[in-house]
Amino acid sequence: MISALVALSVALAAGWLVWVFFDVERRADGARGVGATTLAALALWLGMVVFYAPIEQVQGLVQKIFYVHIPAIIPTYLGFTLTAVGGVGFLRTRRESWDQLALGGAEVGVVFCSLMLIVGPIWAKPVWGHWWVWDLRLTSTLILWFIYVAYLFLRGLAFGSDAARTFTSVYGIIGTAAIPFVYFAVDIARGSTMHPSNPAREGLPTEMARTAAAGHIAFIGVFAWLVARRMQLAALEARELESAARGDG
Amino acid sequence: MNGLEVARAILAKDLLLDLRTRDRLGHMAVFALLVVAMLSIVVPASRPERLAWSPALLWVVMLFTSLLGLSRSFQSETEGGAFALLVQAPVDRGWVFLGKACANAVALIGALLWTGLLFTIFLDVDWSGAWLAALGAGVLGAVGLAALGTLLSAMSVAVRFREFLLPVLLFPLVLPVLVLASSLTAAALAERAAPPLWWAVLALYDWVFVLLGYFVFDYVLED
Image (cartoon, rainbow over all chains, first blue to last red; front, side, top):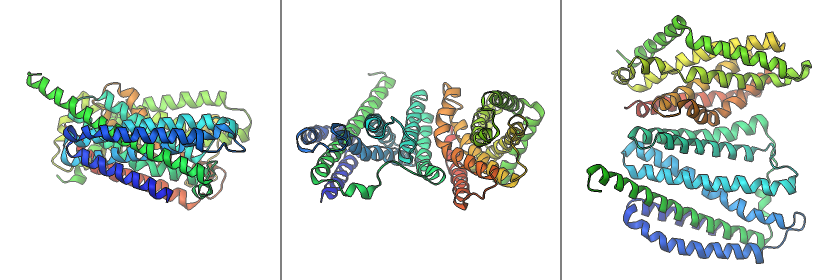
């Protein structure tokens, strides 16, 4: 029931983004409604984190970082998926809108990935006793972050030209192709992990699971809103450049 | 002229250039010598510790040394103004990639053999027990590095801050090569048989990125 709700919100967000994507300049204005809904979801989530979710007996208050850390996962992977999809779309069609989708996915994905990587150690230090440990998911998430930061660097340094858009599309695609290898290679050659495996999470108390789900839904909303706005901004920038080039801007 | 001939011609041209000028290979050799000599001073003196560190250090040295070679894999074309001619080769540009990547792989295997020799001289590493497995890991690792490095080097030719960008683009993507090749090298040095899965994943990685390079090079070279 709870995970079905989260899945539904992913499907809704993805569907809305697809709809926006096909006519960014007109449809992105609908982001206002999505933004308002998301704001309400964020307020609900924050209220649940503070008042509803119980204080964990062993870890204490610091365990509440869980409700920030875990919900950041889905937007991270959604963002990087959009980057790969946008890259393939751009190389095939040469339409700028695909490139704007890829850019939105990468930038917003990096934001959520950074959030996850920053709050993770703050939680790990009191609980595990270390800021950073040798762990499969930690390491592969860090590499993921490096790949997409490199992607943004490439974009920034090669700014503007058509070749730049092509290069970043190619890098987005090969970066995504490398991720399963990073995960798998580290897993088989180094093994062992400190992160709880997924079945262990099934045993969460209902209050905790509900609060985490509220976080997932709110973060997915924030993600969709940010990506839509980013695409809109990129489209406006492109139009501005075009009219400046024509000399009537 | 078909694709294979173009690839072969580019490979032959690059190898000849490497042998005649000796710039690229020479700089890689001197750099590796310098780093390994420094390592021999700073790495703990006891033999077991040196052996434990060697596989990882070998591959880190390889990674940095390969940057010197990879960043210049398109230099002769850009300096001679031949980049546009390369683009105009009347075949699928994937073949241009294969020729270039093969030339880089040969240069990197050369650098790897040299680095292995340096580790024997300076750090007392004995390859005689499992040289075949170590060489196999080295070749697979060099091929993966060459495939990715050639692609990314072509992309960073026209970009500002190339020296900074190439490692930033390359390092995260070659982590699987680094992890698997150094684990395989460690197993070989300890005269253990490595799990076949390690070999399979490393070989698959090479294969995927050679294929990807072949298919996307068309886009990278278009301007």
